[in-house]
Image (cartoon, rainbow, N blue to C red):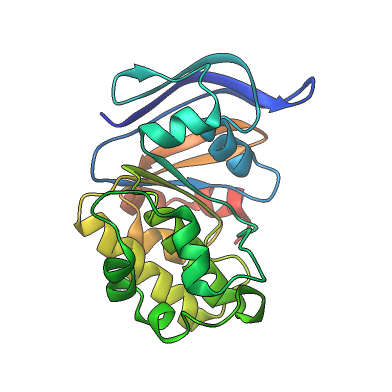
Length: 228
């Protein structure tokens, strides 16, 4: 088992946002976190990465108890975080943005450019001149160059055109085919239905439903909770 979260309570300052969340991500599977804005999806992703306060509960990754580890130790262990706000360096070129993050391992510039050829075409363009879709691809590619063994994707399709969403879906499926476990926070039910194996549906910081993605897609309760 890759990632295990047990009875997690976490939040900001003194205010808890997550109230006893438990989940697991097995090796090689894509697990989606579904829910409306404010449901706790981003907070959960950040809590796994160690970026928000944990009040109680336990997190383990590949049999390491990482509950009290700082973010840099979790990153060194293999957690790769793709934030929803992208955080690229606007004055650096695409290539420079990528090289800043590069660590030794199977993922290198050549491999990233193979899986995302658009980035190869614009590698000398400054980050601040990229479209939203190009920035999203760059953010994912930058994280891949840290050579993670688990990818945490926070709202990767938010605000993107359908053609770019399709490209992100192909990328996620390609990573899944290579055995990369992924925890994905997302509102787009059609997108998650295509890429995810299982899902947890969050509401007000609690898991309301969980199960195989194909079953949840047929659930009127899921559609009602997501208001889609």
